[in-house]
Image (cartoon, rainbow, N blue to C red; front, side, top):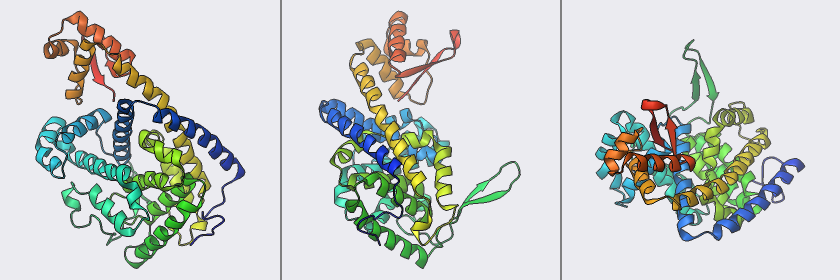
Length: 381
C-alpha cells in the first residue's frame, strides 16, 4: 500500500530533489534535441541504445559478447524478423562466434527480444500485472533450453545468491531473498499493486523505478534471469511514469551501459540497501543511496548523447573507401584485422586502406592494437 502524499517507502532528501530537478532540465533539453534529429539519426541512436543495453545487461551477469558482436547478431536476425529467426540461424551464428559461447548468445538473443517488447509495447503493459512480468521472463529465457521447465514461473526452490572465494573455497550469502512458495507470491502481489499506484502518483518516476527494481531484485521471484529482467522493468517504469520528456528519450540512452561501468558499486549499493535480506516492510530498506546511484547513471547516460551524435555525423562523412573497410569489420566483429587482410577483402591499395583506417580510428569507430608488423585493428561499436 502507499500514502497518496508520498507513495515511496522513503522520503527523498532536499538534496536529492534538487539533483533531480537539475537532471530534469537537461533531460527536457536533450529530448527536444533528439526530437529534432532526422529519422535516420534517431534510428541510429535507438539501435545504439538497444545494442548497448543488451550487451551491458548480459555482461553484468557474466555473458561475454561484445557490442560489436551483438550488432552483428542483431543484423543477422533482422533479416528474417519472426519468432523462429534465431532457431533458423543459430548454427550459423554459433559457427561465426564460437560454440563455446552458446549460453552467452542465448542470453543476448533473449535479452534482445525482451527489450524489443519493453521499448515498443510499454504503454500496453500498464497497468502492470504478474502475468505480464511472467510473460516477459518467458521471453527472456525463450532460447535457453535448460530454462524450459521454469521460464515464466516463480521459483520453486531456494535461490540464494552466493559469493565464492575461489582461493579459500569459502562461501558468503550475498542475498537471502523470499522463500519459494506463498511468501514470494504474496510479495509479488503487493509489489505490483504498490507499483501501479505509485508510478502515476509520484512526480519523480526515477525514484519509483529505483524502489520498484530493488524490491523486485530482493524478492528474486524467478529461478534465473532476475537481474536482466529487473533492469528491463526499471526502463519500463521510467516509460510508465508521467514524464513525457523521459518517455520520449529513454529509448535513445543506455543506463545499463553505465551500470556495467560501475558494476562493483552497483552490487555494493544493492547489498547495503538491505544487508542482503528480504524485508516484508519496505520501509526497513535504505533506498535513498540506491536512488542516488540510479540518478548518477542516468546523468552519465544523458551525457553520452552528444558524443554519440558526433559519432553518427562522423559516420556520414566517411569516404567510400572507409565505408568499404568498415563493412569488413562489421562482417567479422570477432576478429582483429590486419591492413593486408583488409586489402585482400576490399580490393583497395595499401595507401587507401591506411587512410581509411586512420579516419576510422580518428572517429573512434575502430581501435588500433599493437605496433609495426603486429598491428591489428578491431571494431568498436
